[in-house]
Image (cartoon, rainbow, N blue to C red; front, side, top):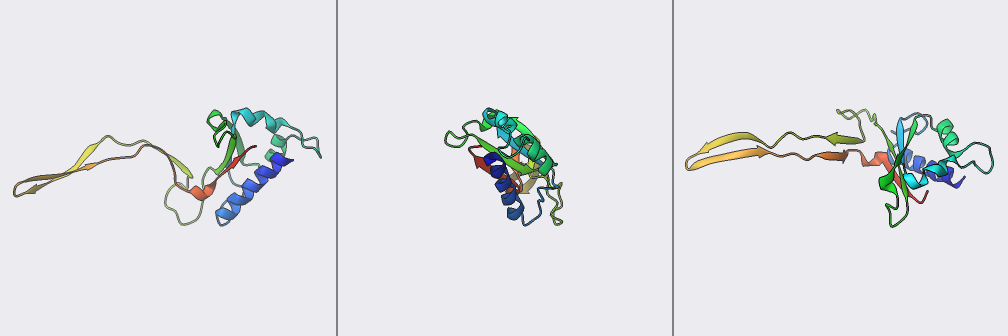
Length: 145
């Protein structure tokens, strides 16, 4: 019951923090759980015969649960879980609505050359690569599942 309460609290933070743009009952979301805590989701609730995982699937049908070994002891020795919306439709954005973006840059390249009286000025393009968080209000982290 404590695990279910932790997840429910995280869902409430997502919904209120996003200004109700994330509806936990209908949104597609991902819950990344520390690998050393995944089996706790198979624990039956005290007041019912259903496991934590079964209860979460019924309550939040769009929730996908994945194991992430990087989250073992990630916060001062405590294992953590993240819940994030896969995308957010806020009505104002012009991109795909993704919470995270994996960006692969182009190679370093020349943008142009400007001729001056005593030389040239050259401009170059640079890029950042990796996974970037575009909508931080769409992510919640909790410790100690």
